[in-house]
Amino acid sequence: MIVLQVKDLKKSFGMQNVFDNISFTLEEGEKVGLIGPNGTGKSTLLKCLTGEEIPDAGEIFVNEKTSFGFLSQDSTWSKDASLFDELLSGFGKIIADRRTLRELELSMTQAQGKELEELMSRYAMVTERYERSGGYGCENQVRRVAKGLGFQDDEFAQNVETMSGGQKTRAALAKVLLSEPDILLLDEPTNHLDISAVEWLEDFISQYSKTVLVVSHDRYFLDRTVNRILEIDRGRVNSYRENYQGYLRRKADNMESYRRAYEKQQQMIAKTEEFIRRYKAGVKSKQARGRETLLARVERMEKPITRQTMNARDLTPVPECGYSVLEVSGLSHKYGERKIFSGLNFNITRGERVALLGDNGTGKSTILKSLVGEIIPSDGRVKMGPRVKIAYFSQEHETLDSNNTVLAEIMYCFNKGEEEARTLLGSFLFQGDEVEKKISSLSGGERARLAMLKLLLVGANFLVLDEPTNHLDIPSKEIVEGYLADFSGTILVVSHDRYFLDKVTERILELSDGVLTNYLGNYSYYRFKKKEALASEIKEQVKKETDSRIQNPSRQQERALKKLAGELQAVEQMLEELEAEKEEMVRRLGDPASYEDGTEAKALVESYDQLEEEISQVYARWEELILEQEEMQS
Image (cartoon, rainbow, N blue to C red; front, side, top):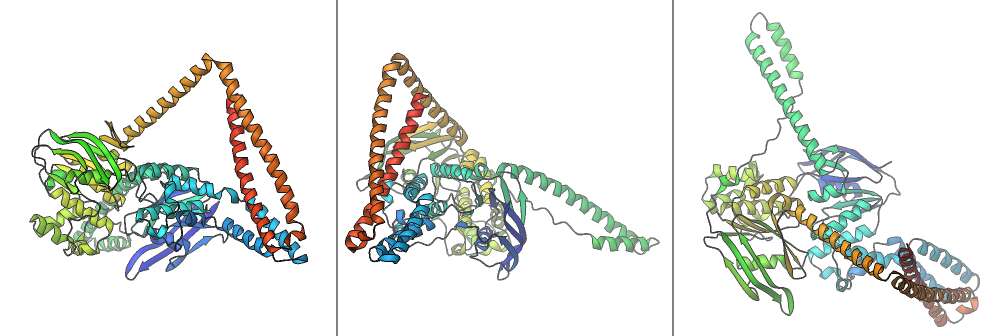
């Protein structure tokens, strides 16, 4: 069933046409990836769908009852709200019912007679709706989603306004996921997520039963979550009912077919023009004029775009160095009393391509800064090998002079002529007048591309890269991957881009719980080994439990079941007592005499709310025990 239809949508900003005559539909339960280079209007399109932007022309058809959840790149926050309260506000209807119940409780303490009866009737109705919609479980849902996206318990009470940009992005994502809309619109949802949080989000979206439209440059993420690709290309939308890998194959086939058709048309045009030129003034002039008329009616195909590419070896020669590039021993660092990492040891040799992986906050960027001398570690030794020349790519791109133009930055920093500088910049997708832009006006992706080009022109033999694909669109990532794959020196990189890691690296150092683990392969190999290790642990644990049961099957099983039965009996007894207490309290709430004293009435209502919460928790424990009992008996 179609849940949204877009027809002939147009949007421009001033003289710049963003998209023209875009048409597509979204179906119920569909997971769709919206892709295209930076600046093609993907975020603008999402805002048009939600009404934040008004299209210049076209129509958007959607049922008025359809709810949207929109994660934009710019979110607003309630003043002085804690993270937990901000996320809880995503349960709009439940929070509204909770607020209504509080208001009714207050009113009931002051009402009498018929007014009181009406308030009590309404209170019962709202309470029933509140319970049916999961009102007592929304706090647990908030914790589950927030922890899945990497938040810790001690962050729940923090004021959102005081959080870092990365934390706010994750909070905005958690909030929109918790709202469970009919159409979930996500704009770059994996920004600021570490790999474990991205994998949690992939599972969430895969299991989400409603429609999802996501803008993302994370190719691994797209492969694992979407079943359709919408590509914005030169102002139009092309649809591919594939995941990202399937889209790449179809796209390549289509481009090759288009190239052949274009070449065939060019041959026909050239042949026709030659005939016209030769016979226009001769005996076949009538035929020539006829062909000229036909040629004028031909709809000319646009020339296929060919990307200007260069080889990394064409940029600057990579100097030779010794076999040992880096030796690290006992590396430790702390900020104040907080220990970031301690006692790290690892070596890197000539030509290796190493990725340093770990969750956010484990100190990966701090390690890189320690290696390149930007910070002094608290303890440990860093030794560079003979003739090693380092080039460091930071997330801040400090090497760029904001006062320069893009062209001047390359010409003056590397003593290049204008033609050569334009060629180099063209290979990094800076075309035409774009090279005249001031660096201060560049987008994050453009700054990252320029910084990477400068890095490769330095002539280093050891590249230390901190999140080199941040802010890059897919075409830009492919450019960077191509050059780094062709780079003949040594690479150490921190990145959350798993597709990039598969393309560029061949060794993984995982930092977890202060320990470095070495994997001799790319990211896919690393994931395989992690899953293999986990399966082995589970198998070993099952074997131990099985062996234990075989050695003493009846006594151990009997002891465990007896203990479980005892706890289950105690919980059931508690439920009986609590339900009896609730029944008595409901009777008192229905007695008008209970509201003669406003203070006592308010206390009674508060006690009832507390009792409901306690009953909910005890029922949850009872369900856990029942499941344990069933598993043990099976």
